[in-house]
Length: 255
Image (cartoon, rainbow, N blue to C red; front, side, top):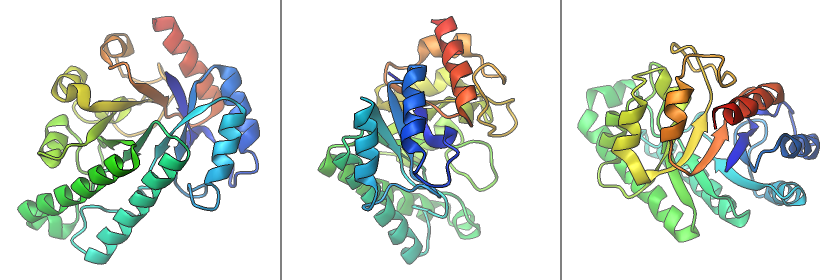
């Protein structure tokens, strides 16, 4: 099942959502990934709109929880608790609209976490345990996403993501483009996480930064990677509908 993320939606509000979803459907996608980020957060005020529009075009949906300004690994209790409450609401609303999965970001580093790595890992895992429990409570699969090369971001390699998750029973969202900016060791990631991978993000880059290019426009070795990806939901995370169209055609050419 192949879907398209709202990274390709350029509207500053949701007035153009239905027309956009219509075009996504006409391109042949099976679902939309609701990117709950400014300026179109998934909220209690608009979740029914998302559901009605997507149902009207027979589109399934996944959710990407908010991540900007959040940090589930924060040493500041108020920031961490606020971050967790926002993620909990996202999971609850995802359940309300029958989303197939929710992707979350891990916590990120700060000066204090760098100096107190053991405590940071403890805080991080406790947050993830709560999120895993909410996934079970609401019946929604949760995937913790690997991060791209960027100075404060954590979980940039499969080994580090594995260390952060520890014994927490939670799924993984495998972002192929992100890994291309770090180790590029796609086979190792798939081997290590196996059935824990509940969702996949597809986009391309030139290996240096997180560009979200159309598939084939960067250096990801797609012919090698695609056959090894698990048969879960795959969401294209590109910047516009033309990139989505070209990426979809690219995928079909390799299958």
